[in-house]
Amino acid sequence: MSEFIIDTKNLNFSYNKTHQDIENMEINVPKGSIYGFLGPNGAGKSTTIRLILGLLKKHSGTVALFGQKYDEKTRTDILSKVGALIENPSLYEHLNAVDNLRIAANYRQDISPARIDEVLEIVNLAGARKKKVKEYSLGMKQRLGLAISLLSNPELIILDEPTNGLDPKGIIEMRALIIDLNKKLGTTIFISSHLLSEIERTCTHVGIIRNGKMVYQDTVAALKESKGKNIVIDIEVDNFIEAMRVLENLKKENASLLDNFLQIEVENKEEITKVIDALRAQKINIYQVSIKNNLEDLFLSLTEN
Ligand SMILES: Nc1ncnc2c1ncn2[C@@H]1O[C@H](COP(=O)(O)OP(=O)(O)O)[C@@H](O)[C@H]1O
Ligand SMILES: [Mg+2]
Image 1: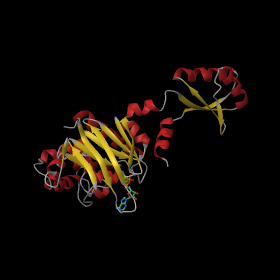
Image 2: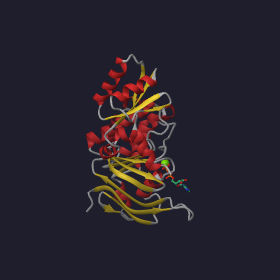
Image 3: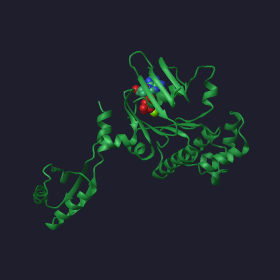
């Protein structure tokens, strides 16, 4: 039996004969993880999610959830343990949150009225429970959608780009909510995004896809490790000729000049202070120091054609 909550093998799918949209997709989502499914727009994230949920018919390969392959007969049973939020949740705009949840509860089995209050509490909408959904912000609608998917107390939650279109406050709230669900209830979470920064902050595991193929799958810690240990920093100075000389004295021969910014590699944070001290000792003005996110470069190199 598989130790993975989602386990796909050789998953293949195409919308039409001219193009293979999903190719030999192998996804391994460990129990209790927050798994980030990362890829540029059009890479095949939504399509893969539909295949996992059986909303599209795969051409070949297997999908196992909770260690069980499912078929037409067992699908409903297995999917009752999965909460999914894909695209915009279908909500009744003229009704309030409680009524939306009541209607959704009717489609599911054995949902107690108390559970409706519980899920509203979890997604921080208890205070807005009687407000009509048409008066909700997009972030609130998204959280109500999540509340609906939580009704049956799922062991696995699948979210397709849940922060798309949200404002910064909405993004932070959604991110905190996801981490909370995972920590407090141990819920396994599968979340797709086209933004590395989103996955880097929230997830324990990552799968990066490109053109329908998995190109990297591991823990987020391993991904960070693989970018190399050195830190690349950009420094804006007033006198870069003098600054280059200072850096040469510091044995920073790999310094380069890029659009008025000096770019150098250092081995650790302490070295950043040393470089700044040496520049200031020569009265060189420093206007800006920033650490370059080379994880972003790695992501681009993995996903660009
Ligand atoms: N309903 C559809 N019919 C035909 N092609 C589609 C359909 N939906 C998506 N595609 C194509 O499948 C590929 C993957 O799309 P999608 O899964 O939506 O990517 P993502 O969610 O990563 O942005 C793209 O090339 C897209 O154009
Ligand atoms: Mg999509």
